[in-house]
Amino acid sequence: MREATATIDLSAIRRNLERVRAQAPGRRVLAVVKADGYGHGLERVAGALRDADAFGVAGIDDALRLREQEQQQGWAPKRIVLLSGFDEAADLKLLRELRLDSVIHDDSQLALLAADRGPRRHRLWLKLDTGMHRLGFAADRAGELLERVRALPTVDPQPVWMTHFASADVADSALTSAQVQRFQVALDGLPGERSLANSAALLSQPAAHADWVRPGGLLYGLSSFDGRTGPDLGFEPAMTLSSRLIAVKTVAAGERIGYGESFTCPDSLRIGIASIGYGDGYPRHASGTGACVLIDDTPCPLLGRVSMDLVCIDLSAVPAAQVGTAVLLWGPALPAETVAACASTISYELTCGITRRVRVREVGALAEVSPRVARA
Ligand SMILES: *Cc1c(COP(=O)(O)O)cnc(C)c1O
Image 1 (cartoon, helix red, strand yellow):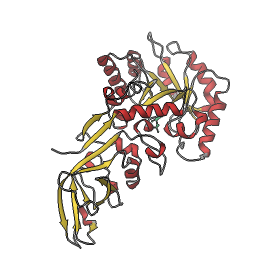
Image 2: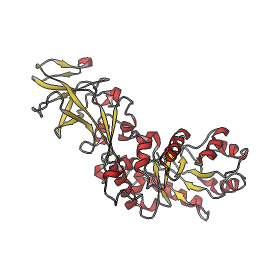
Image 3: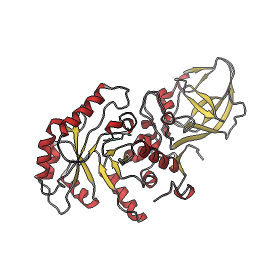
Image 4: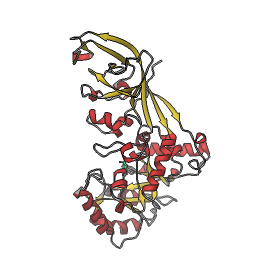
């Protein structure tokens, strides 16, 4: 059987939430679980994050899955915020049925709300664009927006104000300071809770913690800071991607390895072939970059190209390795950020990109951890 396995440590996710709380004491935590919990599995991470104050998802489908899980488990309904908002009238019916909060960021949504009729008042998070120029209303419209929202009969009159940072992971970013400033100026004297901080700002902008912090990556032990891993930041990677060697051989000096003959053996080389590749979500862009895997805790370079089902590994440093030996692609001992840097991407993309054929194993379920961590 193919051994490509993602092991998800639920206790690491719980401890990461406690670390988030320690960074922002007294603030409420909207745990971002979009993109299937950054590839860790939506229901799985939602179970591990029962202590969060709310969940953030990108789409209504994910919110529906969370509500179904709550029903099945008999859990109290959690506040769920639709981070990308709604975009058609039928969505508003679902927001009501599923009791979802929604971000609004565009005038088209105000028009949909104006035409909406129904019993439950929608809870809105009004998103202001303070300089990222992706989603959000122009920040100087805050006062006008509040009046318009308050005139709508089916909307809760007190929205939460939010904005999103473009460069909170860049030290001393002038844009980040400008965004904080614009947000404060725009909302001066206006009532309502505020939310600005993603994971990077949770660590780098304590003055911007406000009422709600919105971490995603840190909950999974991932870092968005260039050159710094999750463990460097004091967080625990929750995903370990591993496989096994299915072949071991010696290749003569001058012979080439893999598709495109991109690696030439300088000397006779003992190599191993592991059953994992880009078809599992290991990045093909890591080919030829010096990217390593861990075998017996020893870094071993990849040789030649990453293929769909297989990678070739230099076993020079691990003479005891044989068919069946475990291969670690990323995890706490080899953070995904290190692999991502080789592949010119970020760790978030790697964990989100794990494919369906990878087997998932859970460890650290609630029953296995101490009562202190296991509080309801
Ligand atoms: C994804 C997202 C976050 C979380 O970002 P991280 O870098 O993973 O912490 C926070 N807020 C919004 C609006 C998002 O879309």
